[in-house]
Amino acid sequence: MGKKSGGRVRVKQIGGKAPMNPLQDLMVPPEEQIMLPPKMDSSVSHFWPLSQTFSMQYKTFPCIWPTYIDVTKTMKEGRRISKGDAVDEPSIQDISEVLQSMNVRHVIQPYKGYPRDVESRWFNQGRILYD
Image (cartoon, rainbow, N blue to C red; front, side, top):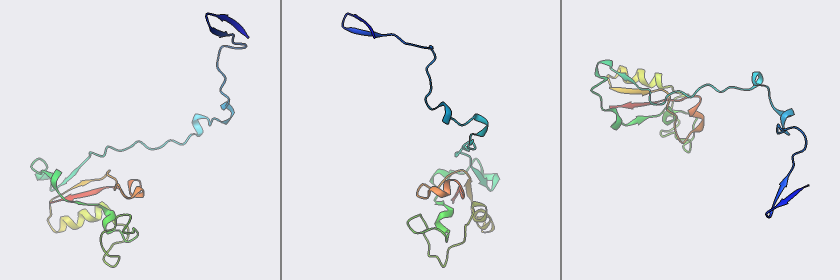
């Protein structure tokens, strides 16, 4: 097996020097691997109206997540209004159009995901900060 030297045992390696990977046969080739899209920058913000881009202090604005008014979500998932008043799968563009028609200053953050609803981080992401 090996030689004793000072209380330590030295083991000789038999065979090649390269370590063998026991799961080599199970590896998926790189061309067949699933590649996820890159994560978008969640700090991107679009202002309305554009003329007030630098004067808006939007960090203190209240927030509307599309999940708040989505009829397909439960109260536990984050819906905040009754199903009778809710909308079927609202988007941040829809909410922005309504706010523009009412002349409300707002900021669109398209790559934010609602923390309580995991599904909204992928499918219906974004939020609106309004003044």
